[in-house]
Image: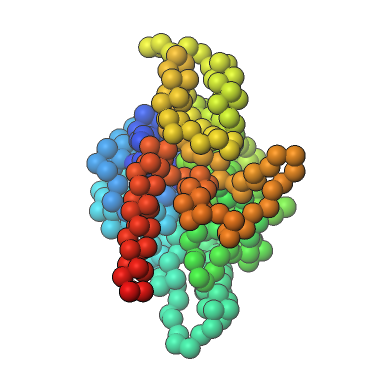
Amino acid sequence: MKIIHTSDWHLGQYFYTKNRLQEHQQFSDWLINLIEEQQVDALIIAGDIFDTASPPSYARELYNQFVAKLQRTGCHLIVLAGNHDAVATLNESRELLACLNVNVVARPDPEQDLIVLYNKQKQPGAIVCAIPFLRPRDILLSQAGQSESEKQQALLSAIQLHYQSLYDKAVAKRTELNTHVPIIMTGHLTTVGAKTTDSVRDIYIGTLEAFPAGAFPPADYIALGHIHRAQNIGDSGTVRYSGSPVPLSFDETGQEKSVFLLTLNSTQITCIEPVPVPCFQPMVCLKGDLDTISRALSQFPLRDEKTQAVWLDIEIAGRDYLPDIQKRIQTLTEPYAAEVVLLRRERRKQQWQESDIIKETLNELTTEEVFARRLALSDTEEDAIPRLTTLFRQVCQQVSEDQKVKSE
């Protein structure tokens, strides 16, 4: 039996000025082909199928098209809700998809949280404990007067109890089936030690930041979502994040995206293999002054109709104030197959120096100089700086006039 573990598709994501429809369509086709080539029996999507609670119509259409294409493969699909997914959105098609060999689990439900997977011989091949993103209200009753640490401990205990009780239920089901097939658990949460990226949002803000991997039951495999970097948690190799199939932020551009392919026999998982996902949209981060950016761009292919444009994140470093920076960058990138998606100044503590560092205090700077230097350190668009400076001068003048009136 073979199972694919993936997560965090984020269909409908709006990436600065771009949507990801073409990339997600290409990934969808690639995954269908992989399932056919490997004769995969089941596909687990461990949360965040959509990017928002109200995904655009084209994202819902792509989701439905994928389910329809999957039918020709005979692959069993299990969709778990993530923190980005709305329960109502996933549940609106749950009953219909159930007729197409699809299990949609949007919230904890004793009627659907245990799924038996069957191999091509129609024999039990694995038992899946289908656990979606757990909201505190789903598993915990709040109590008045609890301290912050008590709330954290209560939530940790509630999650641990939920996993353990469902694991015990799976063991009992295995005994009922008179077999010893592997038990697979899912989850959509942050675990202790997981490496995150800029696109990952904290789940349990103010309560539980991360769940200890040692608190999971001894399942044969735990398929996790929420963290966009593919990785193992702990030393066992059985607790894994599959990561997102496409980069969801520029700091993910250097990562190899993948899905996990599990091979099982009648009693255990014999192989866990990462399958690299092709890069459907090249993305590059460039940092430096204009000369450095220009030299880096010279390595790019020239713009033509056949060459796919690279999406660029350009961070301008240096102390010089460049009021026409957007026009300069546009001129530099124009000949090449590249498109600037994000343009910003370097965020760092600037140091003005000649032969050595000159230390300044607020008393040594005028109000306008302080304002100008704070703008230089911010992400303010260059075109907006003159207007903001004018407005700031008007405010300062009005304050000065008001103080004169009061003094008189």
